[in-house]
Every structure is written in C-alpha cells, then in structure tokens.
Length: 246
Ligand code: PGA
Image 1: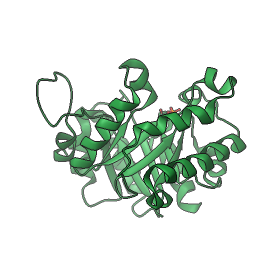
Image 2: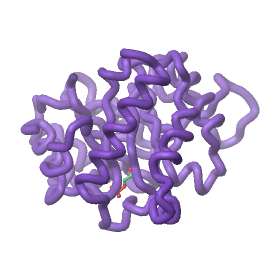
Image 3: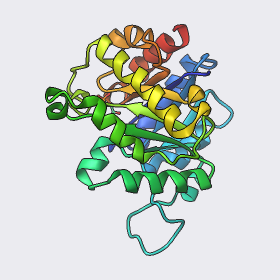
Image 4: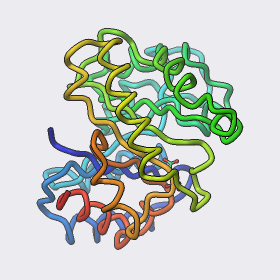
C-alpha cells in the first residue's frame, strides 16, 4: 500500500502561506508516499492550481452531508472536488467538539464525500479522561459507527488521533499506538470486510520530525495526519521523508 502523509492546516494560512507549499513541492518532487495538504477552504482552489501535475494532493477539512441547499457557511463535497480537492478530513475531534458532530453526522458526510469522488479521512480517538478510565478501545470500537460499511480502501482513510495528543506536544507510547492500530485493523475488517487490509491507518497528534520515524515503524501505521508541523515546509517535508524511508 502507498502510505500517506497528510497535513491539516486547520484555520491557519492566507495566500502568503502558499509559498510553504511551493517549497514543499520543490523539495519533494517524487516522494514514495502520497503527500497531501488540507488548507482552509479559501485556499483550496489556489493550492490545487499550483499543485496540479506535482507530487502534492489537496484536501478539504470538512464537508456538509447534503449535496446543496440552504446551509449558510457550509461547503458540499462536490464543491471541494470542483475546487481541486481529492480528499476531505471528516470528524476531526475539533469539529466533534466545536460543532457537536456525532458519529452519525460523520457517517453521512462520508457518504457525501464518496458520492463526490473524494477520499474520506475519518478521524477517531479517545479523550484523556477516556484513556485514564481504560476505555480507549471501547471508544474506538464505538466510533467505527462513523464508517459506512460499504466504504473501501479506494475511498477511505482512518486517522487515529488521541484528543489529548493534538496540539499538545504529548504522544502516546509506541506500544499504545501499536495497540490501537492493531485493534483498528481488526475492527475495520469486521465492519467493511477484507478491503480493510488496504485502508491507510494514519496516526495523528503531535507528529513532528523528531518522532516520525519511530511512529512510522509501528505495524499498521500507514502514515500521519499532521497539524502544527504541516504549516512549515521544512517540518512537513522531514515527516514526508521519514515516511518515504519507512
Ligand atoms: P497536531 O494536530 O499535529 O498539531 O497535534 C494533529 C491534528 O489535529 O490532525
């Protein structure tokens, strides 16, 4: 399987930030993994234009479940595709927390993404309280409800992102990541069948150049979803290089 280094710029970046993408492409013209940046929606069309024909792919950070309609401020999956996106992040913990998105909402968005020809990157992960209570695997199992049962390796990526590791500089131990990813592969197989073997399972939460190689050596870690470190071409490029070498 071709691994995936995905960057999530979150609500960061104006047109000036596109220079980071230009630098990234120039430094990594032919990585042996997929390289994706998900900028704010305002930059998707511009980033897609400059990434056309290069090693860089472009994604959105959310979509609405409906194809169109009276949903002020929202963006349909087909609009992302029209702007040049090939992927969309869904159910990020910040959206689950800030916008009250449920597993059912994420499930509906994944169907919309698939209908528009986008690859859905569905995010799951436990809070610190859940980890401390020893319920991490139960939480992961329950969040499988976000994944439509007829998704395939062609249109689905899963990102395991412990909420407490996002933007904090803290990461689980390598054993803890290994435990969740092995569990995830098994549960995903139960949910979508043998195609689960080809679904990229990303780890996310404080991935940086200094810990990337260790994380990428873990079985069933097929890439990363990177927030803060994706904003700088040098840092994200180092993570791409580590994944290419893994
Ligand atoms: P972080 O964010 O890399 O800044 O921890 C990860 C994410 O939210 O995807």
